[in-house]
Length: 69
Image 1 (cartoon, one colour):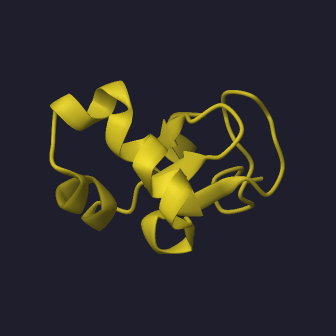
Image 2: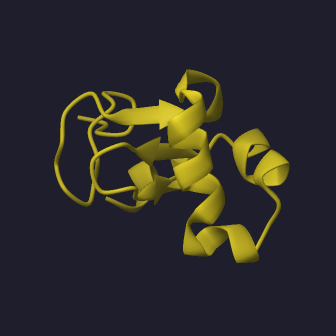
């Protein structure tokens, strides 16, 4: 089963909490902007690479994460 497609966080195992940039509300987007990963790449690049964020533990997941499992 592909956890990423099922919106299941690979870090905290939370169900239905992985959201794309477009699915986040403004407060959640502000949290994402302040995450350590923000120093590596601008948010527009991170969002364009199909990244999703867990709104429970703030893990940043990519489609590549599903293939590593």
